[in-house]
Length: 175
Image 1 (cartoon, helix red, strand yellow):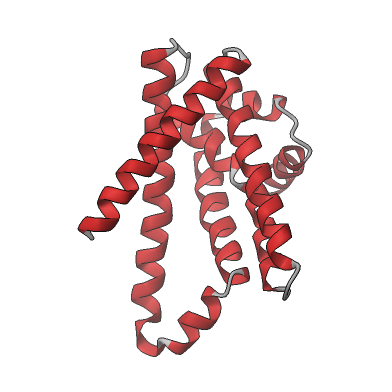
Image 2 (tube, helix red, strand yellow; image 1 turned 90 degrees about the vertical axis):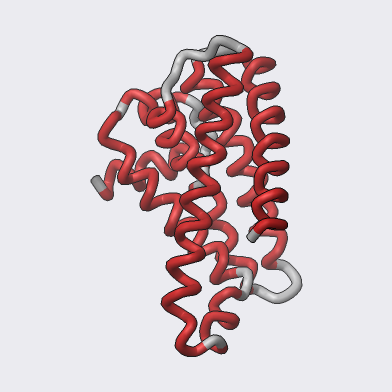
């Protein structure tokens, strides 16, 4: 399992679109996608300085980590579900929610570069590159999982992202 994950992550960093078709068809890759989402975002957060904030909060560390993991997983689920509904309802994409979760979970892998945000002055560039690569990987993941052309994939990603942003803003105000 670990070797398969590492191989797939390396292919994602190379923006190998075929890896997303492979992941989409591998129903056993869901737990791998969960692990990638949690680990990638944790490492990126540490690089951005969350580690310092956690260390200062003392006994609230456990609650913070649980809340943070729940937030990361809910954001991933929201993104996958919205992308699924936009892609299938509007553009007749061919996928299901678990498949979309798997490919978008793996598409998070390039955000691992966020760990370099810990480097003063230059680290933010690596984090930005990781974010851009993750966005490109997400587009490739959607295109391959939905089995449609580039235009439909771009529109699906943009529409789903706008809706997701709106939902997160509303939830942010509520909570």
